[in-house]
Amino acid sequence: MFNAANVAFGTTVFCDKPTQDFHSATNLILPAIDGRNPNGLLCSSIVRPPVNILFCLPKPVDLRTVVIKPDVARHRVTHLSVFLRKECNKRDRSNSTLQVSRPADIIRRLEQVRPIASVNLDKHPEGSVVLLHTHQKRLLPPCAYLNNARCVYECEVSRVCSGAFHNVRYVLIRICRLASASCMPCLGAVELWCVSLPDRIESLEINDTHQVKQTKTEDSGCSCANLPRDEEIVNCRVIPDDFVDALTGELMREPVRLPSGNCIDRSSLNRFWTERLVNCPRDPRPVDPFTMVPFDESSVKCDESLKQAINDYLDRCKQLTKLCNRLDNWTQGSIPPTSTTVPQIPTSSESDSD
Image 1 (cartoon, rainbow, N blue to C red):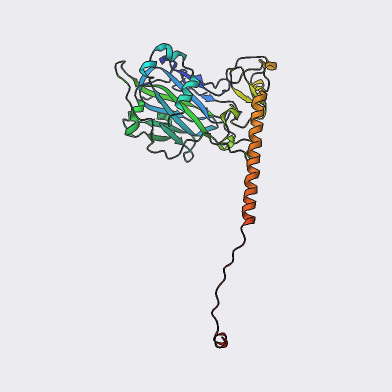
Image 2 (image 1 turned 60 degrees about the vertical axis):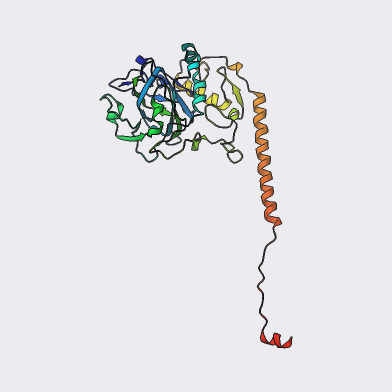
């Protein structure tokens, strides 16, 4: 067995949200000192879940065990999901097709598949390490991070969906929720223990609906700190994706389109630049949070059409709320109070008089 999350194997890693200096996603595949990398991945303080970390393997492997360290210093992840994607179809199996596949497109395709595992660490102590494996559990090498963990969250995948671990090319880890509002999205370490598959072995066809043996929680893309500012008017589950800040997950008020194509709120962009200026005072140039490429600040302008669409959406939500309140008041006022009349039994004197 060997750890495929290693730059020597040719694995690449991609994070769809900005990370802090010295805490980029490449720390998860760089050669570690004494068996581990102390830096790990740590997103910027402005970033809120969900955050996707995609591992792209150079060739299909037979994955045996996934080890995840969900904390960096005081920052800790409590909810995360794991997706696996096998080798592409025969018609798309050319190397040229794999090289032009963008990580964002791969993540979008994996989002359509139910996760192979959804992990809930709310009732587990700090320092817990996630161990995901099939029924064919194997003893890991002494250098594995799991051997030094204080507590292990073990999740065994059922036999029905164990075939998802064969012929794997992509591993997606989604950070869904943090331990507290002061925490930042992070991953301390990731190990993908696997064996290579011969080229002649074809992928196993399995159902895309998977269940986890020990996990009973459902994946949720919204965290408690991820609600929009107009939470009394708009439900975060019904906000169109085009209206949501790509960094904070909140409803945008002044959307700006970045050179990378992502759209975020002007206040989020200013907060990111302010934080970066504190950490990197030698480079005051404005950069795109998603590519870290400098650009002209004057070229970033508010997307007026998107802003108008957001305002129209909020106005419709407010009108709908008023109509619902008026309907409730009309319903309560139009129903007359009901009273029950109890029939009286005539007395003997009344009967004699009749």
